[in-house]
Image 1 (cartoon, helix red, strand yellow):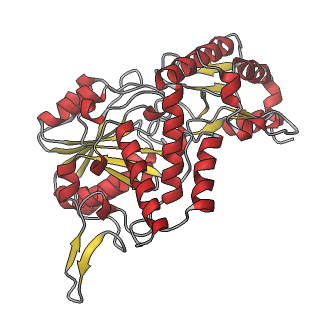
Image 2 (cartoon, rainbow, N blue to C red):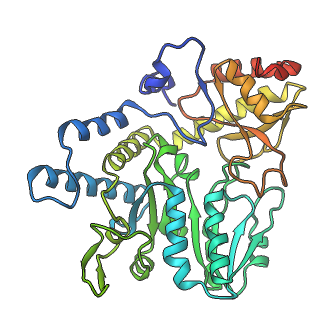
Image 3 (tube, rainbow, N blue to C red):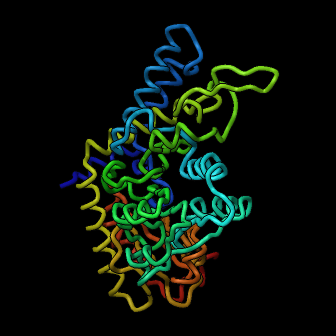
Length: 404
């Protein structure tokens, strides 16, 4: 059982005195940051600032050591080897890195790139561009009751399928995909599987070896870490044969005026320029913090919050809910007759932060479900906050006064 009262004291934003309450229910977009993350960043800037992998002095050596320790912690977090983890700026850069470092070299005219309609833009648009550049074919696995089924995966992939890019957990519908069995089917036809784990790593143990996916990526800011840092996992044999997405200092062994370049091995060859040092240190502080609390206990509590909110919202006659049986910590819904952004603005008047719109998933929102409000709960939220939120949701026609 989580000690939520004590946990909330770890988050300065929740302790700040404000004119109106802060009820933060937009955790699928980004999470609040605990003191330990801020302390890790501050310690680097105040006590041992130096570049990584550049200097021959004590401070630089300490940074090298801490930075690579951070990589090791991130690797262990997802069951990977240290040299299979590349630091990026987030899920979006990770997806683009794979698309342009792997896709450009190994996708040919007529090859198939398979996606689902529930994907975030970051797991869709890079592949649109690759398909146009390489004259490849984009295909979509159809959803069934808003879910990806193994049967529909089998019906969609063929021997021409070279890439299958899919989210582990949807940031809109909230369902968790069976990546292990989806990967098994994709590998039967020789396809490479890329997994967007931005949502799933926040509430469940992810093991890349068990899933057997070829690439997997997530962002630090969604699991209480800093913005501007992400992790890309890639199987070693794939990373080694890929060419870098970015070029610059630190990722090459030597180059000359004849344009001959020898790259370092992965993951270093994908990390051109000054590394995201303080962000990597902050991310590992976040991972250590979450693992100490326990991902299983976090997930259990967040689902308890979601079920409690679902029960309360269903008692209202002005609310329509679209994902009652979802697997994760988020609910999508609407106040009947009110545009989602107007509803979100009205909630904001009372200090409640919820997301309104399509949530960067334009192929599913507006087609399978309407534009909507999204509540996503975290382990620092409380049932008392949900009670307050539901009391405001009763406003009915008052939502039309959102801007007044």
